[in-house]
Figure 1 (cartoon, rainbow, N blue to C red):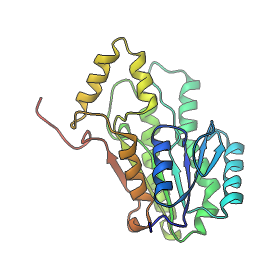
Figure 2: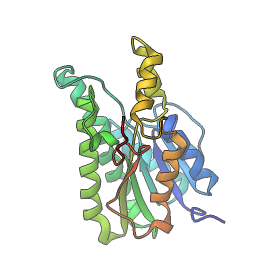
Figure 3: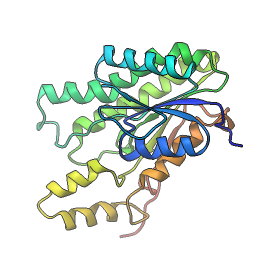
Figure 4: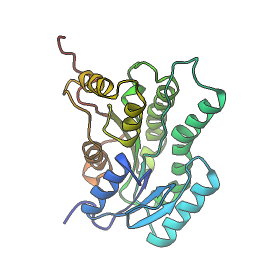
Amino acid sequence: MSEFDGLTAIVTGGASGIGAATVALLRERGARVAGLDLTEHDSDLSVICDVGDSASVDAAVATVADSFGRLDILINNAGIGAVGDVTANSDDEWLNVLNVNVVGIARLSRAAMPLLLASPNAAIVNTCSITGWLGLPQRAVYSASKGAVAALTLAMAADHVREGVRVNAVMPGTADTPWVARLLDAADDPVAAGAALRARQPTGRLVTPQEIAHAIAYLASPLASATTGTLLAVDGGLAGVRLPT
């Protein structure tokens, strides 16, 4: 038996990276999981959904409700990245990143809230980033969006704690995901760029999607019923540890 037996979950961005790892882990622990993404993927219910579009989100949540009859857990994981300082990105790119990374969380949470309010074990977990706390180079748009996700998480936790909905976020460090792999492939020297990313981590390696998934599962679990309004770093010590060079 697992604390997730009988519970249902939505995981956005469920086709790859952190989302795919979270879908797999929650299913392994007994939850029924609907994965929402732009492409088909392996989950109990694979739903095509664009988190940047309200009609798509509303239709996806309705599909989950029709299929599962309930919803207990919402993992707002879908997001996109961007590279550059504050001068580098167009208005359209700023608006697109904020629309997906921030407003996308609001869209899913708004659509799912009536179902979550009916659950005795309601939990929302947002995938944020350590860039919401730390200033890292060439991440202006992305950092702005993740700082907003951190603030949104705390606001949502305050709004819904008395209604029985817990809201938390994970704050991953640099993770071994397809997006990071694409960044490295585009670097002038991918080997050196990879070494620099690993060296920045106190652990000397990138965070795995599975490690982040385990943190998400902890925050989503009914066993964490006293945990809300928490921003949980899963970053290999990047935010809190300083080692001599």
